[in-house]
Length: 116
Image (cartoon, rainbow, N blue to C red; front, top):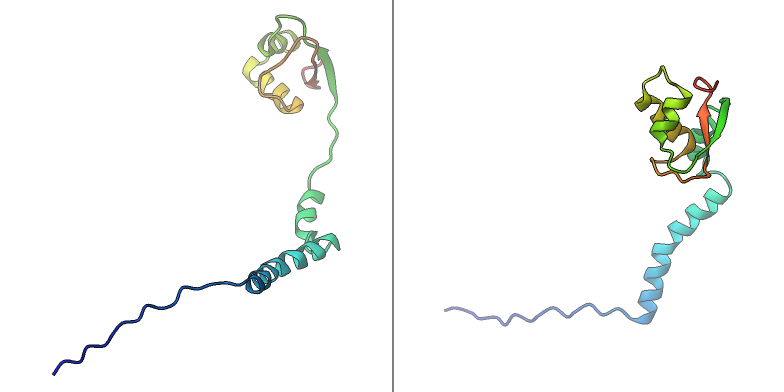
């Protein structure tokens, strides 16, 4: 004899407004705690340690003003005629925080080793 049992579907999970608030508090509590500790400087020590160990040496440089129609390549050739222009352009871009786009009137810092 086979017994047939009825399978009852499990009820869907319903979350009430009170449950949503409790869940939000549960998620927000660690975030707020880390924010408070970070504001006190406890958590931020690892990050600030990396910044504090960075080199702060000063680098001397000369400034040039970009003329109309002038490119970084032309500037590199004029300030360092005996050096590889690719290296000079790369160093000028690095020193000035640019990626090749210059406009007439821009003032560019030239590394000291190429300044005359």
